[in-house]
Amino acid sequence: MGLLAAIRSDRGGQVFLCVLLAVIIVVPVQNLLLPVSSALHMSGYTVTLLGKYLTYAMLAMAVDLVWGYCGILSLGHGAFFALGGYAIGMYLMRQIGTRGVYGNPVLPDFMVFLNWKELPWFWHGFDSFAYAASMVLLAPGLLALVFGFLAFRSRVSGVYLSIITQALTYALMLAFFRNDMGFGGNNGFTDFKDVLGFSLQAPATRMVLFLGTALALGGTYLLCRYIVASRAGRVIQAVRDAESRARFLGYRVESYKLWMFVLSALLAGLAGALYVPQIGIINPSEFSPTNSIEIVIWVAIGGRGTLYGAVVGAFLVNYAKTYFTAALPSMWLYALGALFVLVTLFLPHGVVGLIAERRSRRGTVQPGLKAL
Amino acid sequence: MARPQRVQADAARGALLYLEDITVSFDGFRALNALTLCVDIGELRCIIGPNGAGKTTMMDVITGKTRPDAGAAWFGRDVDLLRLTEPEIAEAGIGRKFQKPTVFEQHSVFENLELAMAGNKSVWKTLFARISPAQVERIDEVLERIGLKDRRLVQAGKLSHGQKQWLEIGMLLMQDPQLLLVDEPVAGMTPQEIERTAELLTSLAGKHSVVVVEHDMAFVRSIARKVTVLHEGSVLAEGSIDEVQSHPKVIQVYLGV
Image (cartoon, rainbow over all chains, first blue to last red):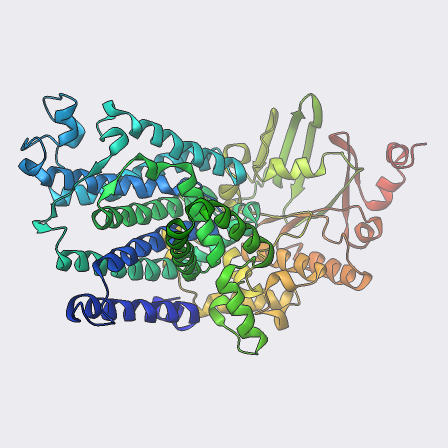
């Protein structure tokens, strides 16, 4: 099935793409064109917040591709997101140059502070944007390729796979916390100045980053939709539902899982690379195991196996988080836990599943959700 | 990866499937004990035996799921089954139906057959695959054969138990295998369904070799020309249904006298 045909029968996706298009048009107008005094003006803070949610939505979609369609419950996708973020962070650190506290033209501040005399070998090349951009994909992609190859070849699946993905992200967190690793230790990277010569503080730069993220999210959606609507997409769902049947039909189940896992890691890395310049900081807490678990909760709450459900979940949960951590900081984790339990018990298909059910009860069938 | 050649049946041995002295142990328990079995081209063979006789383990060995400790397994003249992975064995022309009907429940009947279709099953090829009119025709042909034509677009999970069994047999047919391994095809079926299944399986023999593992003796009697009795991992008796039923050792094993 071609992409157009796939979108034509995907009502939820049509709604999602229309909303995304509206955001791409309305947000720049509200932020840049309307005067600050206008009631409809959108502050830079809100744009950044929305941009952050968009990168989270992309990350959630990457997780939905492997979990919702391929049945691989990864509890370590935060690691790929963080690696993408660190790769672009290294570029941004090199861009600071003499504007750092110590004014060293080559070494980032934390290296000067640690009394390092020269740049470690793996920092070479990161002064080039093209090189850093390729690392954004290569680092998480290679990690996923090696990890997935070993895990899937040994037929590690189900809860065991979930546990080793947790171990993976935890191990990386501990490694990145170390100062002698050369990634800024505890503090990570921050105080970025500019990207490709444009100041990260300028509203126009921030708007370009925001729009780039929105377009990347739309592109991710189209790519994932094409894949899940193709015959390969039906194969991965078949692997999810009856793995040995697929194997005895002649499918190399391990290759399907591996390529979906690698693609998902690439998308997560790209999301991380879009996140860091907008947020302005990356540190080892991004590798924290709870972060990766939270992503899975977004997908579950939105509705897994739909792609746009992941977007809904990422926005709902993170909006709630922003609200709760400001209003009732101590309550957030309880609220998140309660939300997860309630959704699992009463909304097995998530929020979008509830909407689909309402519609089909009124007699209108939503073709995109017929798989639910 | 190269697609294995379609199998040339071994004229000298006259056999399509040849198992020799296959032994499989699990933690000291011998599931198969020097099992030797030969299946001819176009033959319909029934395999019976009490629980734990090694019937399913034998299928696992043939399809590459379990590696034996000793013995040889040949498919035709030159395919060494013990060297191939499960997907390679499927491509070489062996299809397997599981004991519990296993279909892709979230997919439609049509999609189940589409996925089972013989052809290149690499990730890259399936990503850009488009179904051709000839392939649709082939799927409709199989739908007709398994009696699910009016269920074409129904989600496989919504089929009855018997229909799922037929769909799974249909999926094997789409693979266009030379050898079908069918594990307990009539378990849980109504008498009418059993009758239709018997017709279906007998119609397949000749064009394909079919190996059926079954407990239901009436069903075995209705389809089998040759029966193999397994007991404690090796062949106890082989012959026509009347021969094996009057075989003293078989009576002893089944009736305990």
